[in-house]
Amino acid sequence: MFIGIIGTPCSGKHTVAGWLVKEHNFKALSLCESKHDDFHPLIFTSAENLLLYVTENWDDNFVTCDIDSEEILASYRRRPFFLLIAVDGPVMLRYERYRNRKCKLEKPLQSLEQFIESNDYSVFQYSSKSPSHSPSLSSSLYNMTSTSDLTIVNTFHELSCFYSHLAALEITNNERLRPMWDSYFMYMADLAAKRSNCMKRRVGCILVRNHRVVATGYNGTPIGLKNCNEGGCPKCNLGSNCGDKSDSCLCLHAEENALLEAGRARVGEESILYCNT
Image (cartoon, rainbow, N blue to C red):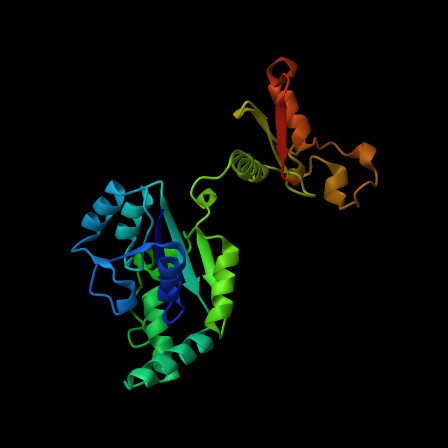
């Protein structure tokens, strides 16, 4: 597993990396000299070299916090063993961590306003000092965070509580990289539901036999009738309660549509129906 961690300033991304190193024997990788000496990371001169090393040793576990562009992220994303984690937290709590860190190092402090300004530039590439500048969200932390596989919100004041939270998330579970069959088909059922035109609720269904999709279905009016969301079903469009005037409802269930699509011969024995109701 190769985990990349991104996050807002003082959100705790290096804390997560350190926890993976200490608790799960991950090896830290970096594109520059690390300030976290306890990591003892391997240093690489480029993201390409780092990725080559990870690929050649793909059955080991690695973690890096050095992802500062979408280009680097896209190259890592091509590998099936890569997982992206985004870490965030309340601004005031992150500023408190920043102050405590700087005070321990006896270094000059930014004001809260300066910290927020730095945060806005880091996340959105926006600066109030250059309001006419149009930020490029395509390469911003905000855009990369929106594609993360897991988002961790660090609202903890004590490290022990944060570590307990990380353990509960089961970050290293391989199903995060490749879902098991049941999870996979339920994801497909959720996707099928997005095609629903029923005004009451969205439901998707996947009919599976021997791990092969036989048919998909979603609820809505039958073929040849006006879609429910276009007024095709009077009951659904009147907002009637479930069970009321059910004999006047024209919408078919997602399961019905999937079975109709498949037909008796294709369904056969030992078929499984996945539905997101």
